[in-house]
Image 1 (tube, rainbow, N blue to C red):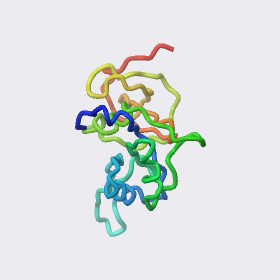
Image 2 (image 1 turned 120 degrees about the horizontal axis):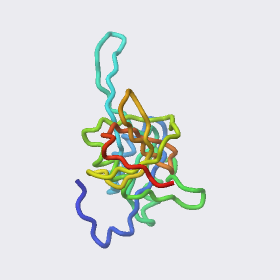
Image 3 (image 1 turned 45 degrees about the vertical axis):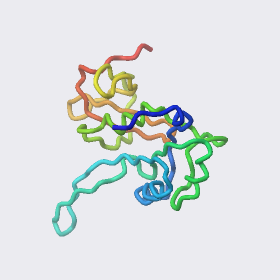
Image 4 (image 1 turned 90 degrees about the horizontal axis):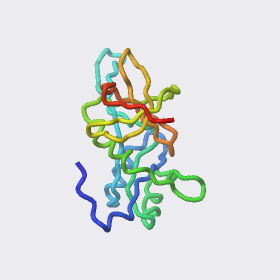
Length: 174
């Protein structure tokens, strides 16, 4: 769980960082060395190698992206790290992510087995009404006959899917 934020932390925001392919973990280490708060959401997948050996791989949930919590003056520190291509933005300035989305990725996914969700099926927009993920908006989709909550991370145009109890979801008014 995150420590409480002090008044001096208020100027820091979460941003998505675009990295060179397959260098997310290396960039995460560089951020830690530079004293930059960084977060790389991951998931586990079981693979079978050619020799029939089973292995569990820990892969980035959003390939080529990780998240950093920085103030405006720390952008240069991030951009100078090896493997960083850019801080995601609209062309003029980096776009901050809502703290609630990062909190969802950090805390809400614990024990829910996240997985990448590439195709966003247009479905009903819903909000989680109770629990650690309360207030988070996303989409309801069906997967393997169970309710699946899809959280779109807009700045990086990616999604994450989590199976949830349909009873904790409520539709959003149109």
